[in-house]
Length: 418
Image (tube, rainbow, N blue to C red; front, side, top):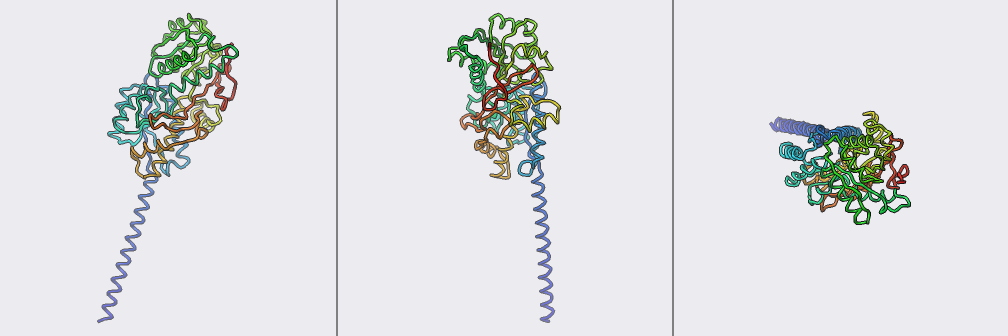
């Protein structure tokens, strides 16, 4: 009787042990599967950019840069073992659409962070909603300092500002003036009248006034206008030696053609992606670019050493040089990557708060970017990138751009005024 009882007890213990072992193995397998699923689950980040409308060239270039960045990041293991998936949203560069899309992405999509590779008008609309919704917005392209002046706490501007552009333009003009003082030069300002163009133009004029440099004319136009003959004639009448011109690709092309029609040949210092667009020699006769001795204050130029790997990947994929728009958006995506990695180290769940905190902690050396930046570090007061710095690239033979300023990254020499 005792023998039978002991046997039954031992058999019961064995069965319970087996059940526990099977349950443990099932739990381990289930846990492993969950971890594998989490490791492979894509990190989705919305990216707002103008794919259509009058400024679509910016968005199309930004989209191409996003493709290259995403492929590069994922080929290297992604972010914490998870692939990055950028979801492109068209804003047309319009503030009302950007704001509406920002609301949709944060309410319906519950995005913990949004990237904007957009013009200043569109980014301004998105930033306003991001602040009220308390969702981090990383700006990769807009330069308007007016957005920074609002003191937003959820806006982080990877891009340089209007103030940075004006300071670089003025520093370069002092370098390029040669032995003749800048105050003795005849300088005209020409810019499109959006917050982007007007913001930089007005800041540069104030900077020149403060340093005793007079402006012989200050002319504005609407970037949608394709007949710039009257505008260029007005500038020509002021007989400038140097025209500082802030514009986008389409209006710059229209204006350069008008200048040729008028046989107007001042030196030109451009500011922004328009005068620095690598497609410029295809859109106007290269002889026009050469006659105007064009140099350009820009966000990016593919000939700097830091940009070599990106340039090679972009050329291989698209058969063309990356534009300023592509370069600055690409750089912003890698800043986003660094913030995502930082946030994931703190917690496996990405939240708006963890992303905001991650941006605030970033301190990336400039030589780890594809830009001319000294560093990437955000001002807690307004989200400005404290290490942002422009470069100046000069067109050579009207066909290729060479970085000529600042000296620390220059590949060629400045274009000197006669």
